[in-house]
Length: 154
Image (cartoon, rainbow, N blue to C red; front, side, top):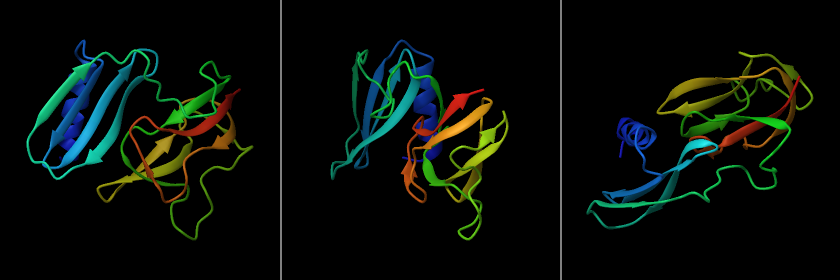
């Protein structure tokens, strides 16, 4: 499955009444689910040696992509990854991180990079406030819609 194919699947779920869709193709399995409160997220389910394509659709009203330990009704704004990729806090390994805990950010402030298919995508703050927690780990993979940072709104 390539990124373009996965994006088409996400749009299919967004534009339909489907709450959850699982796909298995060429040994790769993904799950795209909608939480009516938080939007769409993609979860790689597993890699299996099977090659047939199977589909499973079901209601996922209880699904919650919010990070463990963060209350659902949090006073913090969540900055989420818009794509699947590798999370980097700084523009280069020897550079200072874009943001630190306690730092004030404005709408449009670059907070990190998510690398996807050799493209470096700058992730910007979508609210004004103070960074209170960095949730993603530098150099580690992140999923679509995964919480990267928590910001206390100004």
